[in-house]
Each structure stands twice: as C-alpha cells, then as structure tokens.
Length: 170
Image (cartoon, rainbow, N blue to C red; front, side, top):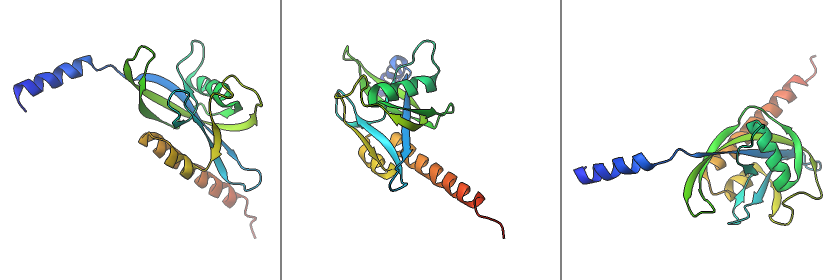
C-alpha cells in the first residue's frame, strides 16, 4: 500500500462514526387456520422497502420496550416481547439533514396477541404477514435475512421439543 493510500485510509478511519443504535421487533404469530409460523413485514415510509418495526432509543424505556412500542405505532400489533435480544443487523440510513449513517439495530422477538384496527402510522405503510422464508427473500439487509432464518430454526426446534414432551409414556 502506498503512503498516500495508507494516509487516506487512516483519515477515513478517524472520521468514521460508531453506528447509531436502533431497536426493532420481529413480530410473529401462528396462523389460526394453517398453524404455520408467520412474521410481520412492513414497508418503510421513505423508500418502500420491506422492513420490521424499529425506532430510536427513548428516555425511560428499555430497548425491548422501545421495540414493542414501535411495533404498535408502525403496525398496530401488541403482544409479549422478549427481554433478550434475538440478534442485530446493520443498515445505512440517510438522515433528514442528508447525512448518511450506519445504524445498528437490536432485534427482539414479539409474540403478537392483538392487532389494532387503527394505529399511529396506519395508511403510511403496507403491512403483511408472511413466512420466515418469504421475509428473508423480501428484505435487503443480509443480516436481517439471517435473523429471519435463525428465528425460523429456533421456533421449529421449540415446537419439536414441545411435541416430544407431550408424547404419552407407554
């Protein structure tokens, strides 16, 4: 590497900012008719790409409480949110002032129990329930894609464990 290239790389590293933190909910339910696992996707308001509900930290709220609140405001869903993170993903965001930043999004699983008819951002986004595999094909972020597949595997394993414990002994 030339001296000039090394200096340019060092300067770039000096000005790199740490990722901005956001919190998200991976909302899920069991379809009543098919008994299949479904996850919630919605479109972003600015680009229309498929995402999950997410938002910035809020004073006085834990990260998982923020995730649950965003799920209600953006998609009208409520339920039980896990306090342990499922994982995280990163994505580039353009702020209102035009600055491009990297956001780190911690994701929390939220088992949906109710869906509101009216909510804050109704009509501003498309909301759809899809399989984990379908969600993984729709989202742009590779790490989020991996989280959907990891979540599917986790839920499949939990379902198998429950089935095994319910087999009557002979």
